[in-house]
Length: 204
Ligand SMILES: [Zn+2]
Ligand SMILES: [Zn+2]
Picture 1 (cartoon, rainbow, N blue to C red):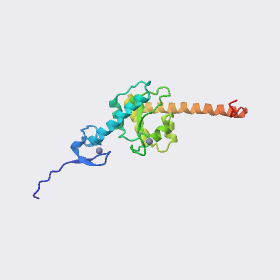
Picture 2: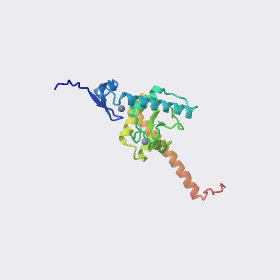
Picture 3: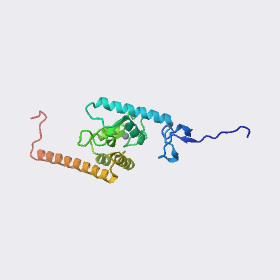
């Protein structure tokens, strides 16, 4: 061969799927092969998405204390590789813009805007989960896989400095509380029906 061929090591980007020279992936000692899974331009794009999500939240909930930094929000997007934490889809025109999602809803006790309580989710999952505890949502919502649940548990443990067993116990406690609230409501409804006290449409 007359031409000297320079062999450049390439790697396939997890996000755009394109093979790119290894230099276009940041060094990361925690990753296999010592480089990140996504190329620099994809990483930059996802940081922008994270930054926008961070700002959107601030605008929408001016009264909720912000206990998380822009950098942490970028880390959340990085940890989930830009995919919905529950159903694992990627952001697209079809799924709409992804949201920062509170694992424990802000409306419930202990629900904070803190990195240990935040994941990213697609609109559909965000709407379906609403104010349900994580374990109840997992039980009832089939696109939410066991692998996704396990990853979220590890993620919460990491960012809250607890063990996965402690996190699991808390999730079960939340689910039990939710169930007993539902049971109470069912009992109340039963009493009303049995006593013939169904309120009329006129609101009597
Ligand atoms: Zn890429
Ligand atoms: Zn989803």
